Image (tube, rainbow, N blue to C red; front, side):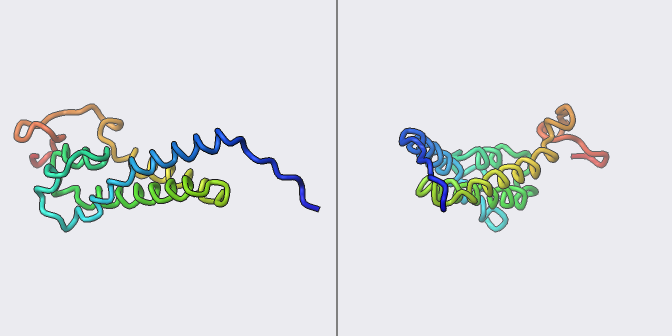
Length: 139
């Protein structure tokens, strides 16, 4: 005999769908950075800041050296966007996707926090470009 199923309240389901849809749309424009390794270097400043990832690439001190970094971050962002959009469509039918979303967010945080300059050392500016941390052999 199956246990009785409890249906969630309608307003909670609607609120979850709206929030998942909005967050999914926030993550979606990062797909433009999937082409970053092959795009011209002027693309870093030409793109409108539709997402935090695109804004960060435009503000990078050396966008040419960070092309693959932003492309790899965009892959995780797009996975999160697709999961959120699928959950917004049918949230009760796919409970495993919600668990995968939590795992994807943990991977994104674990992949980005160790490489964040601001969290590891105080920001120092070099004299030649005034935006990067100097290395022993120059900028």
